[in-house]
Length: 125
Image (cartoon, rainbow, N blue to C red; front, side, top):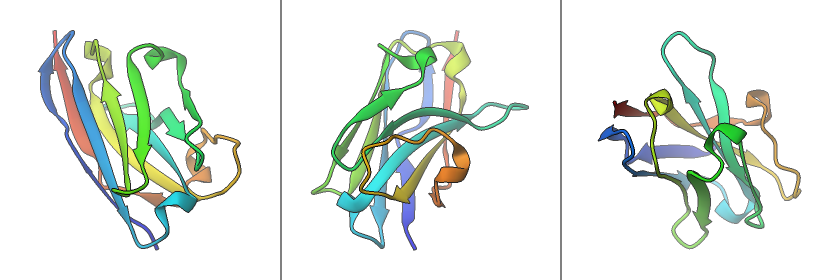
């Protein structure tokens, strides 16, 4: 079992920045592929970004150039740096994990076995 705890959400004005953190425990972090998803009110949970065990990354087009996913294997933490925030970025952001030492980056929700409780990000225009 993997426990994931997100933090760093909050209220920010459009154009501002936030950094989300997700601390993992319960398994060897360096063996985990990590993902960030978000869910806006009335919408499906959608993929945002992911990072494989080697540090390779993928970001959905809507956030490319604004968001950056990274990991610190010493701190067992994955980050999502969010810059130039837009009102449409408002959502609950979830951290997810799967045990994988493959370089393929998965974007589908069902590929992830473990989820955090979510952290709210609200961008005011």
